[in-house]
Length: 380
Image (cartoon, rainbow, N blue to C red):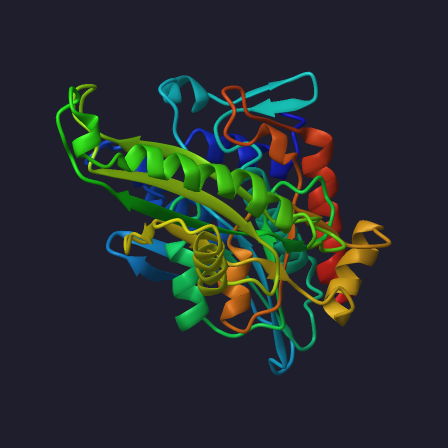
């Protein structure tokens, strides 16, 4: 510990602070919420010379904003935007005890995304302490709440926060610069039948049987049609029927059946468009099913121009010749929808996120910090 860098020490402190999204633990559990981490980081940033404020995104849950003002008038802004919340697991107490062994730091949030928090804030503080600030660019560290559930923090910032020329959203990208990812739409379809006694099924109409035909069409014809579309960084969109429920007991013909659908979208596709094409598909096959009005989840896809000057500057700092696409989604699309061009970048590997022994390599953490500092110094 005596020889650990400030970034490593910060990450160890962050892992020890619980910040589990309240959606994943019982109401009132003291280990939920980002407030403790936000308060700790706010004081840490303030001691480092940054101007700190809190932006309430939901009752009791506030985004943290820590600003480094330029030496001259503000002509553009850059955001460093990791999220503060984590998922939770039954063995949470053990995961809040950070360990540093064999070049790794282990603990809940190590890579998703407290590693990004530590790298981004450490790099910003290094620039602040150097005495050489960007001349016309304000840099704001934005610790976002609720990414792991409803993205309340990024959606609120997009509506109420200061505009920016670029947001670097912190996620474990293996230090690749990400300019595209798929979106996700969750939908429910319902088929209706008529109940009858199981001894006389001919007097009823089986909603599960009707839904079985719908599932077959979605998983075959529809899935095959999606393969004809492609994005250079993301490949093809996909569909998955993830759950089905219908009926109450074996001796009753089920009167209704409901499925849930996960549809991964490409840039340019929308939830309304997905609904229309599924409706047309069922009509062609003479199948009857209706969408439930319940809105489960929706995240827009991301596509940012890799040729933007600030994106190119980040690529040069990271020594990357091209940007990439990823299969997961994050806080970037809500910020982009609010008019802030956004990319995704950070140390660590998404393969470690949400795992029972989540970890990040110290080499990746330190390299990510150095890249971000180099990028910000280039803004001068």
